[in-house]
Image (cartoon, rainbow, N blue to C red; front, side, top):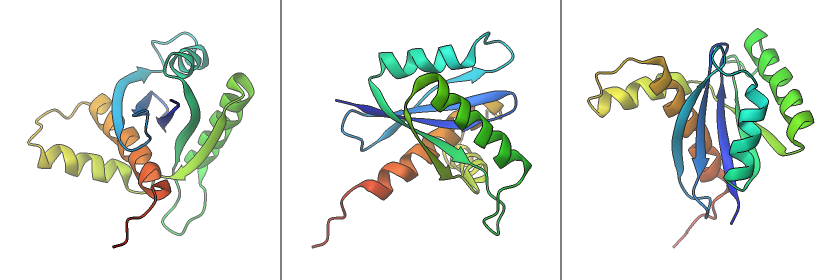
Length: 141
C-alpha cells in the first residue's frame, strides 16, 4: 500500500515523517541535515521510492493572518523543485504553531532533549498527522 511523506522544511534541517500503509498514523523519520547531505532531493527521492510514497505533505509556514511571508516563499520554491525532481503529488499544509506544539509535546513527554532535530521530527509528524486526520472519514454515531 502507498504511504504519505510529511516534511517540515527548514533552512538547516528537514524534519521527516512517514504514514503507515493505511494512512492513519504518522511516524517520525531521522531528520535530514541540509549542510551534511550532498543532494537533498536525491535523498528524498530514495525515501519516496523505498517507502512507496505517493504523496508528500509539506508544512507551509503562514503568518497568523494567513498570508505567506519570506519563509513561506522559500517553502514554495522547495515544493516547486521537489515536484520537478520527483514528479510526485505535493500538498502545502498549514503548519502554524507546529514548532510550539512540538516543544509542548516534548515537555509533556518529559523529554529533556532540546535538540533541534527532535523538534523538526516531531513537527513533521504533527504536520503529517494533522493532514491524515483531516482526510480520515469521520465516525458519527
